[in-house]
Amino acid sequence: MAGDYSDLTFQDTILRQYGDAESLQKMIELEWQSISINAFIDDFYEKIWNINTANSYGLDIWGKIIDLSRVMPYKLEGVFFGFKEAEVPMTTTTTDPQPWSTYPFYSKKYGNNEGTVVLSDDLYRKALMMKAFHNITDMTIPSINSSLMSLFGSSGNAWVSREGANAIAYRFDFTPSTQELALIQNSSILPVPPGALVSYIVEAY
Image 1 (cartoon, one colour):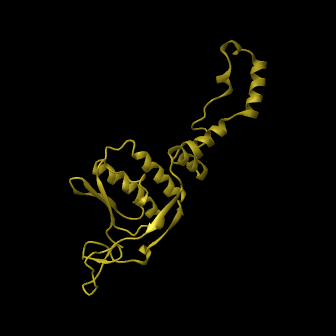
Image 2 (cartoon, rainbow, N blue to C red):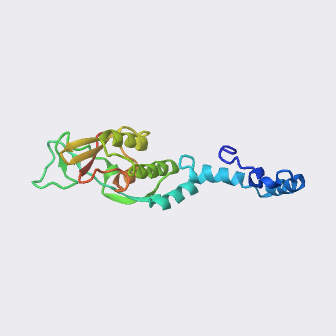
Image 3 (cartoon, one colour):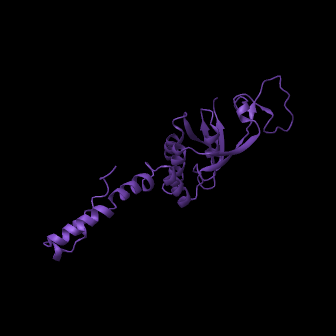
């Protein structure tokens, strides 16, 4: 907000030897009022520099800095469990029914479709901060869980579970939107411990 981050006044720019030059200071004050950058500094900080308050343009600048585009591809596909009556071939594919409690119910939302989405400002802001999280995280499950809830908490619960010595699973108890699915499928968004095998599981619809 204006005034919070730009306390610079014209007196701060005057050498001490001119401290008593009233006429000179008056001229400088008038000039300062016409060219003061205080409002610019406040706007720059609020709309660009501070990622928590940055507008669309500011977020796009941050995206270029950390190499994360607002436009992301997604692919609506998955594996689903079926009923006993369903014919299950010897070798299953991603569209064949799978065992009970192994995969979610089929949803038309997860047909074999793909496309691109443009992230909203709110989700893009969270995605940028999640990517920055990669640089400071210790890759422990509590840390990753905290970041997941920051990113997806408004939609439902998201957490990571250990699936073996070198495997983890990202789990979601909500149906991801196409924007959220793009984030999940973007390899630079969700942190992955070095050498770990990662899977993504939607627990409920």
